Length: 175
Image (tube, rainbow, N blue to C red; front, side, top):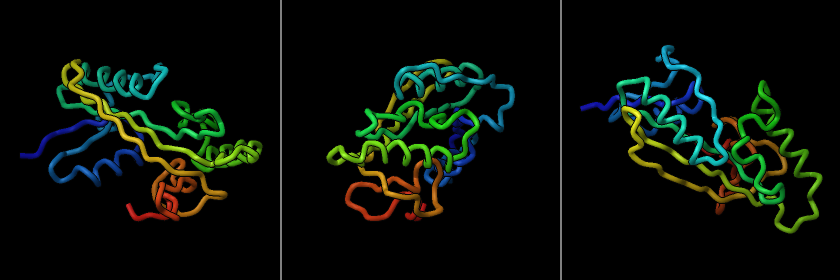
């Protein structure tokens, strides 16, 4: 039996990554397939709060199992920035390249800090149905920031994030 799952996102990159992981056991669709769902704003102050807010809002409008995530990059030398603002770090209409370039410029200013390239990707996923939160799940990948963008896989900060124990960026790794 295939389970219908709606992602509370209109981000096609995110949808493709999750489809790659969950299909064929799950039929994964995003909010692009559900134009009746109103825009959901991320007004929280944490990844968990934003993921929960999105999952609950979408699940109140759809008769389906809904998952939402909020994730981002935290760079130690920048005090955890961009954090929950990762998607809008270089402005509302910025490209992924704009965000990467801004982050690398900011890091260049704080080079003197020991181990200043330490960073992590943090992700929180919330699962909801009919306006009820069923659970939240957290994941962290520790790593560091490369000196320059490398690779074409993934999206966002993937070309500059090197997972701990590897030499390649997420952008250089196969999906």
